[in-house]
Length: 196
Image 1: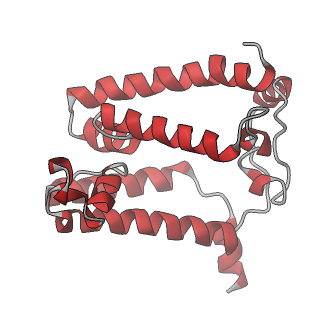
Image 2: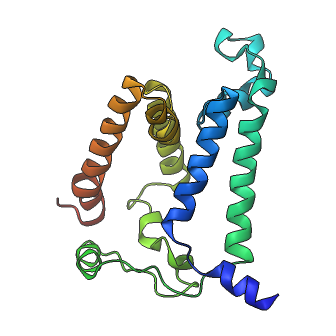
Image 3: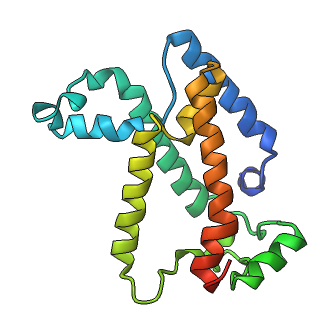
């Protein structure tokens, strides 16, 4: 049993995820469903009774039960991975990336105790003088607004929309990449060092 847990704790090849995503997408295509995580917020609002006040939330939430199950499974899977199958190895990134991150004051975690080895703690630090709750609320609003404005989130457009050859999804994914590049090379350096 210990050998199995040790094997499960090791980083898996990226192709495993790719193959599983393909299986999920083919199954959804066959069943006529669409994949997307941000749609669950609408479902949760409907469950809370928002459909009585706004027509957007007035729909049959039972048709989206599988998507709620997917999100619950993702949360449970993350919990199991962190608490029962943690990797003892630090994340391996390129030396040039480490140097670039260090120039912005971000140190790559080397142990599980230092951010579980994946996310540097400096990325969770709030700007000086800004309350953490306010930053989280603003970030959550921007993500929610962006997902609604784009007609879906990255998983919905990049995985489901592109698989179905939808033109709006291609436009959205290009926008996601442009936004990611701007965040990485312009906004993040400004936030962390005060200069781009």
